[in-house]
Image: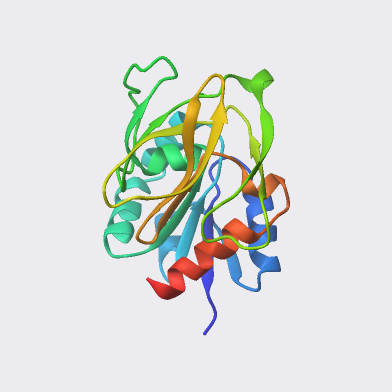
Length: 202
């Protein structure tokens, strides 16, 4: 049976995610409208600007249908801005609550721009629990940090940084996966592969 994964195509690195998914042998499809959620086994929410993506989800009448699909068990992988949108709470880099649309699907609090602005972008080699084959190259661009993970959330990777401290950067909750960085930019498919394995075993 063919696995079909959608990539939310409102903003961000849509083509890069589609390319990785196709390389893993699954059917990949861009998603811009609610009816395109039908029949998906999972969805990737790419990086971009989380406030803008949240507003576009509302504008394109995708927010409510997507929340419903998540409640019904559809897996979602949120990267960078996507991780913020999956969170139950989001804050600005200075700790103030962020007033933006959220899916509220994961019991996590995410701090926006935790590692600094565009000029503070960096790369790091991460050991990610559940990912074999050595460290994973992670690209952090205006990246958030996961400040709090609830009891039902499994922490898969952390990174130490002068600005953000020892921060959670990959975690999962059931069929939901969040990463603070851009796995699609390093060309390493292993985090996407982990997401596909999560869909098959949960």
